[in-house]
Length: 120
Image (tube, rainbow, N blue to C red; front, side, top):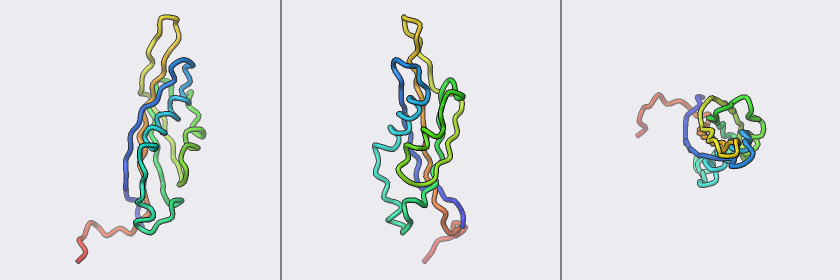
């Protein structure tokens, strides 16, 4: 068996007033997921819990993101969350920040590796 990519979704999230990087990251992942209804698991006979989802978050301060809170957004499957430098910090007149995060969610299933051969 081998992990095969089945879907990739992207999202953006913000925290307008609190400079909460986790809140922006959670909103970015929700933006990526909530616009979709992936029916691949049942279409291929997999339980939804078999999904392995790699989540990549980009924010200006990666150390301030709670990875467990981001992973908790996923309704099923196994999550691996990676946070790296990215996103934006937008300064406001009062000295505070608006925080923007980007998210990519990549869905994998463990499937038989056919080596790319066509079946006929």
